[in-house]
Amino acid sequence: MINLEKNIEALLFLKGESMTIKQLSKILKEPENNIESVIDSLQNNLSSRGIRLIKKEDSVMLTTSPESSEFTKELTKEEFDSELTKASLETLSIIAYKGPVSRSQIDYIRGVNSAFTVRNLLIRGLVERVINPKDNRGYFYKPSFQLLQYLGIQNIKDLPEYGEFDKKSEEFIKNVKSDEENINSNDSA
Amino acid sequence: MINLEKNIEALLFLKGESMTIKQLSKILKEPENNIESVIDSLQNNLSSRGIRLIKKEDSVMLTTSPESSEFTKELTKEEFDSELTKASLETLSIIAYKGPVSRSQIDYIRGVNSAFTVRNLLIRGLVERVINPKDNRGYFYKPSFQLLQYLGIQNIKDLPEYGEFDKKSEEFIKNVKSDEENINSNDSA
Amino acid sequence: MYSIKLNQFEGPLDLLLDLIEKKKLSINDLSLASISDQYLEYLKQLENFPLEEVAGFVVIASTLILIKSKSLIPSLELTEEEEQSIGELEERLRQYQRVKELSLNIKKSFGKNPQFSRESFKGMEMGFIEPKKLTLNFIVSTIKEILNNLPKIEKLPEIAVKKIISLEEKINELTDRIKTKMELSFAEFSKSRNSGGKELKVEIIVSFLAMLELVKRGIIIVSQSEAFDNIRIKNKE
Image (cartoon, rainbow over all chains, first blue to last red; front, side, top):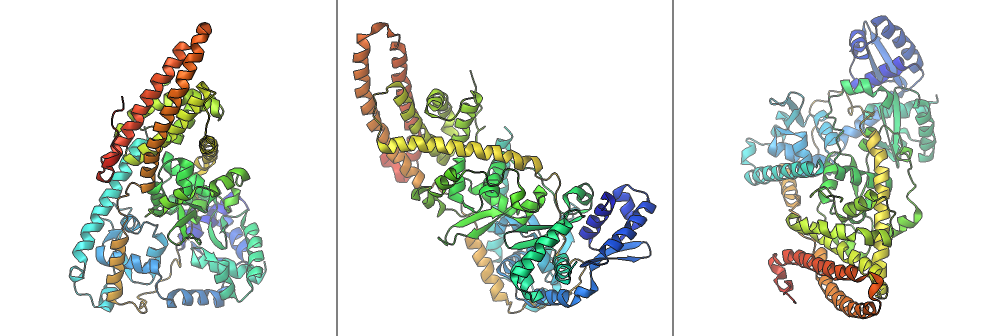
């Protein structure tokens, strides 16, 4: 497999959604007709695999093969029928109490990385993400309207321990960050 | 490519995160040892493509290939932090080459308290912790999928010089005195 | 003269290893004896270090003093435990050196050519999936649990303090033993005046006492936490 084909496969895998020939051409710095011919080759190479390339006009994307649908459906069902894990419950509670809150704040409070957990809550529609107004590369997470309705919460601030949690978690995040800065300045010495 | 291999590829593509052999076995209704051997074949088949299969203990996951990183880096919205302080690098190396290890073992090797550094690596998702089976107040730390992803390797054994910590020191560290273990019970990381 | 920058080191092992490597020495009792003065010199700057770090530095200082005393006064007999602590220090240094070598592999590839994962169930719009068995009470109790589990500021592990207390005893005992040996050695020395060793031995005493002073400083820091007032050392001179 030539490099260009590998790179296209990698980009489509990561993107998940469809990409146009033009977008690919721009990222890969290759003329569009090269991209197009390599896409035909990739489509061909994938035709007997679990991942397929589908093409519609000048857009392409990767999907699972239709022959595997029995199992992909089963996986989807299992994923979403299951109860929330302890990690999800913790993350959801933090977002409910502190939202809008950034991923790194959630990570600090939990002490572990929450990337997958937050993603899981997003697809379940329990939380939603909004662009951080101060930094448009980052996101903030907040409870979805449906979640609040489902739990019967009128106003987050009326929740028990609301003030306590807000105060302590803020203090904690502040401390961790200043420790971190100290350590970093020592390390660069 | 046999059907089982295609189906595994499709499931891993959809799931995005890692899956255990056990989960795959359950959904695909195939014995675990069949799954395992097909996974080896899939890892092999993908080794020259834009998508890779990475493996950690009994879990597997699909990722983009390291060779495509010039372009995938551009596409990803993930915060990508490749900075490591001296303390982080040392601690991460101990966990990568010797994990699973306890906090007291890390402290003993480094000669300093590593609570803060370990916590920081956990938050960044570069290491993960599991309950120490012999002592459920303590934790063991080990490499995460995220670490393999950052290093661009498919198995932790692909690290240069992996497993070359000589046996003698291996035992030496295991025999860390019991008072060192007591420090660990103060570990709140 | 090799100069040391404060706060440059992660800990006592890091400092020791650096001193050894700068002199291109291998790890053994001879090289440890030869860098012990520089190590103790560094300890003088430790006053502003967090208590727990001081403990670590001082504990290793005691082993270095043993090594140096033994190298200067070969007739000084070490207990089995002392021999062990010397062997252990050498082994720890080798371990640590190995970790540093291996860490270069990590440093070289970390973040250079990363492999990215796909977002889970990317592109699937599920809408709102009712979270089974989830109630408001559940969320409130989870928040309480999280609050309780926020890491407290780390207290000085008792074990480190215990080590300093036993260190104090050990130093006192060692002082007595060395003083006896010293007298003996001086007696021997006076018989062979032209050996050129006199200055060296005076230096031993001076550096040993200077070192004791440093150790005391470590202990004095400990005694500031009220529970340990009773271990404050009185001047024995």
